Amino acid sequence: MSEIIYTGSIVQGRGIGKSVIEKYQSRFEKEGLEFYPGTLNIILKHPVYLDLKQADFSFDDTWYLFQAKVNNYPCYLLRFPKCPDHILEVVADTRLKSRIEFENEHGVKVDISGNYFLKATLKPNIFWRLFWWKRESWFYKGNRYQFLVGKLLDFNKKVKNLLMNKS
Image (cartoon, rainbow, N blue to C red; front, side, top):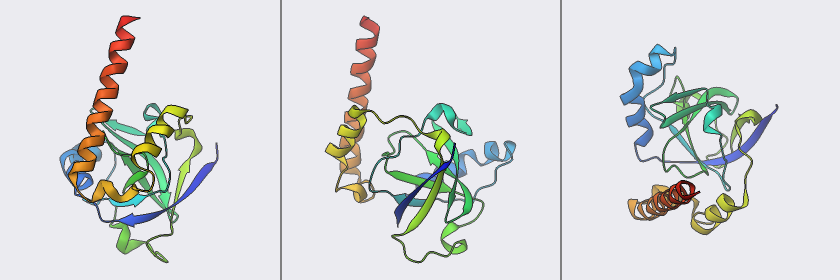
């Protein structure tokens, strides 16, 4: 399947990606992966639903890596629990901000293989619009909003599990 190209904006991160890279560095190396200890954080104006079962690598069934390109430079997208679907954490073998030429921080091009995508259904799209639309950067502005959305996601998951166990 062909690649899908997204354009997003770079935003300063909160250190989550860096801590993941440091924690799993030896496991990455066993897989032949070597990453710069940090991520490039890109915010999109809409969600991207990646199928975790299609990830190129997964660690502890929590951290998932998908091959991609940022401004044509090969890298991986890092997905983790409670990461909003419009946020892309990008890992590479180098510090991307100093390696890649960016015309501006609002026109970053991300190429992702179409094989990685889930079909977007109505429920996640409604959820995303309710909690993130026009508030895309709030994930990086503080912990309160992320905490609230995280609690709602946890509650939604618990309700789903209860309903599935009753049938």
